[in-house]
Image (cartoon, rainbow, N blue to C red; front, side, top):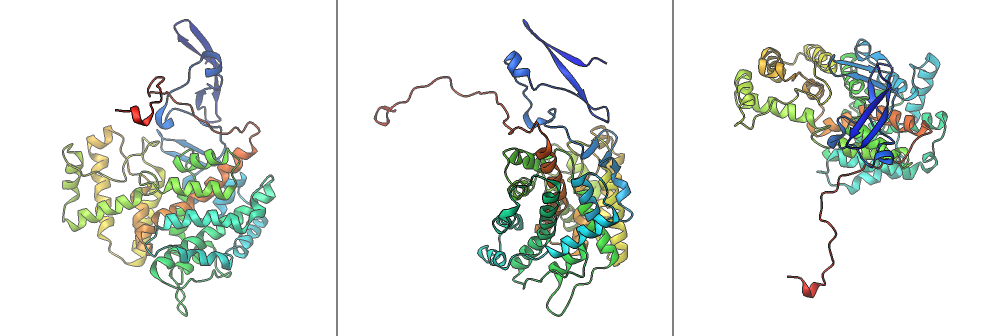
Length: 429
């Protein structure tokens, strides 16, 4: 194959380098395009634009492949451990036994919030969206830890990562408790990461919430499967903000804001609402699928299709199996799971969806799992943020280590007026 691509436009002829990744992905390097030709690439939504080179996550949407640092996502399903995966994403390799236990100990040490931070929650109304609180409180962390603003080596990143990963679950739990008018529960240093989070969420004074193995695995798996997904909207936002050398707290708070959008982090809430509408409206899955295919209908089949995947989202397969395991363990007969299963069966056999490559995605089952555990819907996106935090940190640190790091500054095609003159107020029509 040629190592260059040729661009011809009228009298302009330009050779552009072709770069290739480790999985044979090929891209045209247009960094010198404007300087040499006066042209820019126009790509709304950046669907065909590579903004960086990254060694963190690999996706093949056509084949339904997702790998973290080369490890297939399916290999994390049997004994899910979110902290192990977080270390892998951020620092590049699975932790040694010593590294793992040392990092886990740091998470326990840093779980508490400064007592002054607790008073910040009182400034929010009970009805405040938890995502608004989460973003604000991550930014507030930077006020309480100014010594962690400048991170230039792996050791300082590790220390800051331990604080962020540990405290985000405390912030999330306190946001939930504040919305319910419940007393805040301090982290328990005897508990592991997920059980400690659920303790802070659901325990009451003198009535501790005990997390069993199945629930712990389910939450670990939800967090792991959301931990990174290449250059999505929120991760690209973290990289964009971080390119200005904004600190890690500010960059991750911006990621939370991007994830808040219903087209990004709120999709599993929409899936659950769809399933509830079908159940409460006594509509059969077959009838709903017919409505979803009707262009005159407002019904949409939520949780199907993905911007990247043109095959089965591998995360959806794993979560579907976990939903079955969790509900079987709890003994709950959730009619929404039955509806979801039937919708999946219909869509996978219907030529309308098959031809359009609309397969179940990660959002299709994650909401059912969180609902079964008792997580309210307004906390779903907060859980997504907790899971995605390691990916944000990994990309922020990878970008900071890149010696060619430049502040991001996309171009535009101007479509406004040509030169215009200012008219004094008294002379305007």
